[in-house]
Length: 335
Image 1 (tube, rainbow, N blue to C red):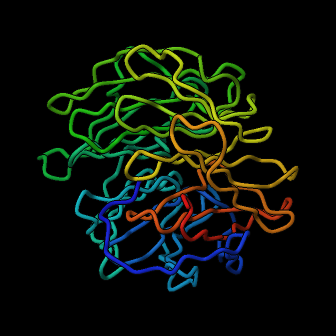
Image 2: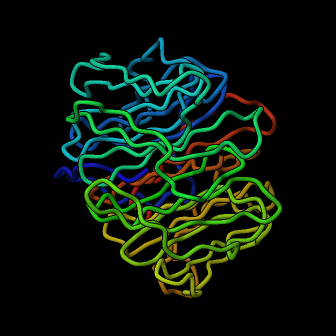
């Protein structure tokens, strides 16, 4: 969920205490959010029950909805930002959207009954966590290499098995690390992989993230987790899962996102008690910014994304129990 290519822009400092709210997005649910800095757009997918990806600008205005994307969930950008990959959990495929024309240019089938759900990128490779929600312990990791003669390869996770489609996170570097986590279990495990010549090699693994994992992010040699069973976002070394700090985030942390320079971490929670998104300096003790959401709004799982220049933090929220997402925007989030 990291931004692709930073752009140069002059943005005035805004001292308002609350994030700028946008109208309700025309989606029946939420899957993922990612920032396209090249075209100054934000992509928001609608999740398993939706068939679309919303395209908004940096002011939060909806510019288009990309239709015929069945079960659009995970989103990932190519390294140069020219292509958007969409995991189609209800279409058993990964689609490719041209970010300039906003049209689909390719669709890669992943196999019947695979339900690809979460995406991550290492170099030019797209990894997808797959496994349908109504089947137990069928979660696996697949690889999409658009340049290969056989672009899609499944069952890349080695001996590890996941109950459902694993959530994936990586820095985007060719060698990883790639972190896979099992969402929502009473003991949510994470598995760290290194990447070499398109092959995953399993490293550290454990249930250190606690119960009900909702989000992961990786920067350098540290992974950050948000899990509903904790009251804080936590950090761990990718080498051995040793603890590297914690950041208070209200009860039931739901989302975590590292700034593109790795200096700041944003944390959201599924609670209306304070309904804030907190921004910390990595290694810091107290927030450098508290983003007050609108009354009744909470940050959705995996609902945080930074712009490449760090001038914007995009926050996908839900109002009470309404499934339709909203897009709120905080300018200068680290100030």
